[in-house]
Length: 536
Figure (tube, rainbow, N blue to C red):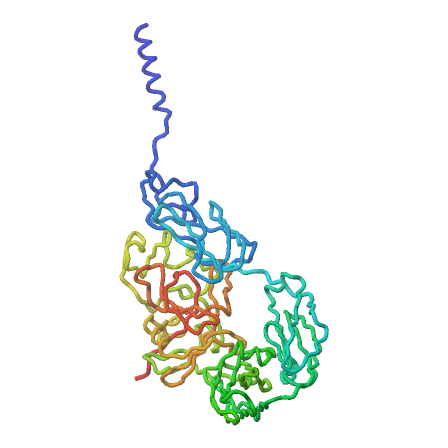
């Protein structure tokens, strides 16, 4: 009996261990689409075996409309690192500050138009998503003016008050005023109508695609002086310059001398003389004594290609501002751009992008080091990316290399150069130094060329011309470029030695007559403007 009890106790001790499954080693290969930045992960300092060293927010740059939402993701590095990610908005260094909300899981909702930044942080590691919020434009339905008819004397003034319906449309449709005859009555940007000389005319109030005409009668007064503009004209029009001509004469004025001026402005509308003077640029200025006159005939350079301008002659006297009739002219088109362009630099440049057949063509979009186009421009489809944005080629920093491997390659090899593979061995993607050389030795002008927005570059060395379209860039899974007409990104063949996930590129921006050469993520789809060696 005693032996049976001992056997029973021994069985009770052995059986639990026999029912427990053996421990297995964890799978070292994590799925590539997992999200190590989820918000319910433990704090990086809570004892995780792998410390968070850095954090990457995707997307890094995005455009949203008011009311739209976007789920941001935070990837913790190195692989396997865990930690709690917190999200917050930052105030960007810009004059137009937008507003978004961000949830604790990284869900962004656009609230107010402008620029804003959203930061993800895990311990000391952080990254930022740059967001541009745009507003929905409200059209004008109707316009009301406070004066149905204006009767004034020369030299006096009255202000037209304007009401826009709906009221919200005014923020998107600024009000402008145009006088049909500025010799009879002028009007400024605030709607103040000033009688100039006896006669009748109309003031047109414009907002959006709506307009209202207000009749004006100016009764005569005896002028104490005379102002005369004669033979106001333009001549010698080229693609970037024009000569402005005219005779200015003043008699019987209290001033002892006066400056004769031309003002000009780019416009597809019909600006008044006062609007041109207020918003335009001074072309020429020359002083003369009163009573007296002066003849002006001087060229104006650095104009936009194939662009309509309005110009006006002006005299600013003690008695007021006086203007000639408004003239309009359109600059000439660019000269023919050949396929090989000698800008007087260390290499020759191609007249159009890889994949394009003409200067204004956008061409094809490539990730850095890839030689084919695709639909998805994301890290997951990038050729040289492996395991959470570590690189398998073109690596100088071990922290950026897969398994900490480096190859110290800093310039694209020919087999990875889309320009070489597409056009042949005589063509390649320019280096960072060659792109900088181009930037430093050209005069740049933002313009519209054959209905395409971009930068005209004129060589300071030999006046040769290049046109770089603002073709936008490819990001995400749409397969279509974004920011077309606002941005242009052109790859160089040079790796960013500080951050191997990036490479240098040329950035052109709308309404900015300056361009930047800086790094960008290698997976983004940018255009390429190739170069070729000069003939011996």
